[in-house]
Amino acid sequence: MPGLMVDVITSLDGFSSAEGWPGLWGMGGPEYFAWLGEDATAPHTVLMGATTYRLFAGFLESGEEDIGALTDMDKVVFSSTLQQPLTWANTRLVARDAVEVVRGMKQDGHLPLRTIGSLSLCRSLLVAGLVDRFRVVVFPVVTGATGRENFYAGWPDVALETVDHRTFDARLQMMEYVPTLLDGPPA
Image 1 (tube, rainbow, N blue to C red):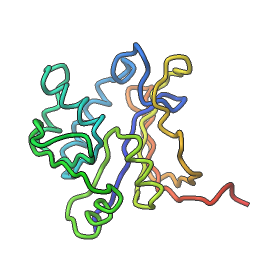
Image 2 (image 1 turned 45 degrees about the vertical axis):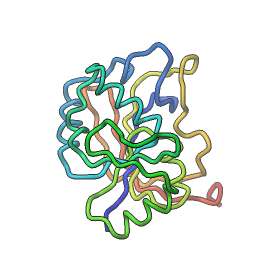
Image 3 (image 1 turned 120 degrees about the vertical axis):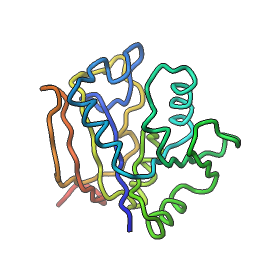
Image 4 (image 1 turned 180 degrees about the vertical axis):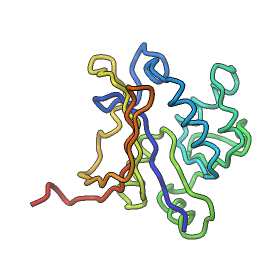
């Protein structure tokens, strides 16, 4: 049975982006980009919502970002607002409930599943108990005044068991966890 990893990048204060800042807060470096390239070659299906799809499809159309590795991957977009045909190759549109569909993909699928962006999708999959791994790369910046989309807003309490960690370019921290949903603070 394939596992599901929620993959996210955040500022130290938990924001996924910040108004006026460049992508990756301008802090991506050679070690991080090399790791991303290696990581992207492992076969998996990418899961995302409409907002993330629109962002990446815009990168594709403008040529602003190199997303060639993502273009070749199997992608599933959960949306009730997007319409067929989708312009990004190897992308399937699903208008049904994401939790039910991902549960089926985990039971019947062959490739590991990973999210990209898609905060509400990630939250709903976590709450449903479908997330096997949670991997976060923390960028050393606090964007309290300009931060948008606090990744953890609306999350339940979650205990995290560390299974991997790494430092890239002497500043970015990657941490990988096995999440366990909690009913509240531990006794």
